[in-house]
Every structure is written in C-alpha cells, then in structure tokens.
Amino acid sequence: MINKLNLLLFVLFFSPLFHSVVDEDPLPSLGDYSSASISLSGEYNMGRLWLAMYRGSTKEHSDPLMRTYLEDLIYRLSETSEVRDRRFEFIILEDKTINAFAAPGGIIGINLGMFLNTQKEGELASVMCHELAHLSQRHFARSQNRNSPLANALMILGSIAVAAASRNPEAILIAPAAMQQMSINYTRSNEKEADRIGFNNLVKAGFNPDDMTMMFQRMQDKYQNEDSEQFSYLMTHPLPSERLTDMRIRADSLEKASKDNYRDNLDFYFMQKRAEVWAEKDTEKLVIKYKKDSKSQINNTSLAAKYGLSLALKQTNNFEEGFSILRELIREIPNNLVLESSLMELHVAAENYYEAISLGKNILEIHDNNYAASILLADAYIEDGQSEVAEKLLKDLAKERQTDPNIWYKLAEAQGLSGNILELHRSRAEFFILTGRHDAAVFQLKEALSLSQNLFEVRESIIRRLEQIFAAKRALSELS
Image (cartoon, rainbow, N blue to C red):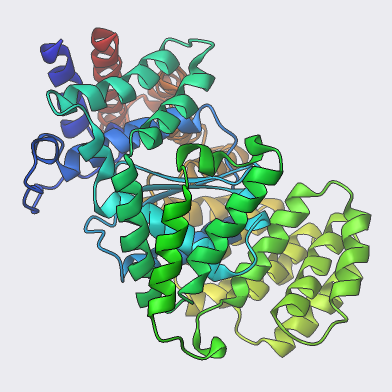
C-alpha cells in the first residue's frame, strides 16, 4: 500500500496536471509527526486533487461579481491572519443551506446560503476568519492518524478521485461526505483554537468584536428551532454553549470603538441582493419588496434595496427602469466597481454591446485584470460577434488564473465561435481536468492532436498533457 501511495504522491507533486507550482516548502514543521509528514506543498496538491473531483459533483455558482467580492474579502482577512501559504482557491456553491468550509491547501468554499443568512459583512467575515484559522493551524494535517497521517490523508482524497475516475455513480455522494468527514475530524480543541485565532483575526481586520458572537448565536438559535438540515455548517462545526460563552467573554473584554468605526462594506449588501435574486423564483415579489425597502432612510439597507430592484427589473426585462435606478445609485456612490460592473451586465442583457464594451474597457484601464469586468467584457465581445477579441482577453486571463474552470469554459466558447477548433479542444480539456473528468479531457486532447498536423510544438504540448493525465489515472487505479 505504501508503494501505491508513493506513486500517487509522486504524480501529484511532480506533474503539472492540476496547474500547481510546487516550491520547496520554506516553512519549518510544526513540531509534530503529522505536520512533518504532510508538508504545505503536500496539502496544496492534495487539496487541488480533491477540489477537481468536488467540482465535478457539485453545482458551482459562476457569478463573477460575487467571486470578485469573496476573493477581495478573503485576501483582506488573510493579511491579518496567521495563514502562511495564501495560494487560495475559491468555490461558491448554489446551495441555500448555511455552510462554509476550508479544505487542505487553501481551498475556501461557501454556500450562497451564507449570504442569505447573514445580516452584515462582519458576520460573514467571522465565519471566514474561523475557516482561515483551520488553515493556518493546519487542523486537517494534525487530525490525521498519527501512525500514518500521509496514508490516511491520501486515502480520503484518493477514494474520491478513484470513484470519479471510474465513473462510480456514488461519486457524487462521496466527495461531500469526505469533506464532511474532514471537518468532523476536527477535535473540540481544534474548534476552540479556530474560535480564538479567528476572533483575533476579525478584530485586527477592523470588524466589530461582537460580530462573531452574534453570528454563531443566531445560527445556533435557528438550528435549534428550525429544520436542522438547513444548517450544514453546525453539523460539521458543533457549537456547544461553552464556545459561545468564550466568544462573548472575549468580545466583552475589549474596549469597543464607535459603531461607525467598524468595517461594514456596502458591497456585502449588494452581494446579498444578488444571492436573493438567485434564490427567489418569484421576481415580481422581489420587485415589490425592494421598492418598499428602498424608500426607507438612506443607509446600507435602502441602497442595497435599490440595487436589488435593478437586478430584479433586469430579470423581468424592464431595462429602462433598471438603468434609471442603477445610474442614480452610481451618482450617489461614484467609483463603486460593483455598480459599474453591474451596469455593464445590464447593458449586455439589454443587448447594448457597444456601451458594455466601452464601459468595460474604461474599467480595465483603471483596474487592470479585474476579474468581474474581464468576464463581463468577454461576454459582451462574444455577444457582439467579436469572438476573436474575446478569445485574446480570456487567454490573458487564463494565464493569471489557470485553475478557474469558468474561464476555460468561456474561452472554449469564444474559440468555437471564432473557428479555432484546435484550441477549442485544448481549452475544453483544461475545463474537464479542473472538474475531475479525465476521460473527457483525454477525448478532447486526442481530437486536438488529430488537428495539430505539422504544428510540432503544439503536438508536443498536447502529448505531454496526455501523458500527465495517463500517469495520474494509473496512479489512481493502483491506489484502488
């Protein structure tokens, strides 16, 4: 068994299959056997393996504005955290339940239900700080079997990969179950440690110390009084009363600043509305609600209601009123990237592609490589019949974000429309690799190989990619 595990480890560490750049781990071990056995590089590679299989069995939310917001929040929080390796990967799940997780190697996952069930940014940030603490203290590595932590870790992750690679119909159940098992492995002391370190991070980042207590207290109250299945987070992160007491004591021990001095980003409330519009199928109901809420005194709630109204009006194709409201918001809150990107989005929906492209170019001149603006601009180019321009834009974005399947998916679309069929197959292959579908990736690469003819460098690149996939599949097969 050890030889098989070593074979998989070799493939993970030395193959660029998952686009990982494995540097020599510059950090000392934490002084315990498990940490020494699973290095930071090892966690990074295993996490990317797990994520590919997980993406293949879940519904990922590809909203570029929400992804940009979440990335900005996590990187901002990481600056005051104890996380050393900040090569994060983000996944937003189309799930109304309350859940978030941190997987080995800097993977941060969040359900849309977290946006639907938090009242201000500090509450969401408190959950993210808790998850960052799990990463910084390497609780996954420390929770493994002390006699053979590496084997235990690889068996958990390898079982997911084997199931998916063999097209096991139960693979869709295995990935979330393994993720839940990772969380359950965290001990009570791990959770209390994550509370303490996460709380310190929250305060250092400028949020209200009471936000963590309020968030977990409200979650606990709802968990006890409502359908517990809606609270996946508390199923994997048990919250006994003494932990809530500890949080409250920490918050009470600090000298509180003025309420206005704590961070509470308006963009969070905009993201809430995007989640609400996604979750609510009765758009007319939202229109009525947002019109009522927008008439209250001017604050984050009323501004967000106006923004939500513009989104709901877009859903009903009432573009004229949507533009009016969004432009009024931009006058009230100038230079807000969410609002400017949303105006691009509305122009694309209304088929005003020239306006969307002009606005996107202006945004990127100031905010180079902004993710949301780049994706929306690519969409505008594609819809306007400028697929070659979209292809170039997305290729540049893919170089910066090689592990984002959404970019490869859109790039393949642009290449198909522009008639670049060879590169279409290669981009599709990258998408399938990142979503754990190796057989589909092999098929696409073989199609690309048949079209490469005398393009020797391209052929060599395709052949190397195929060899990497075959090596990984052999290792996974040996592991099983």
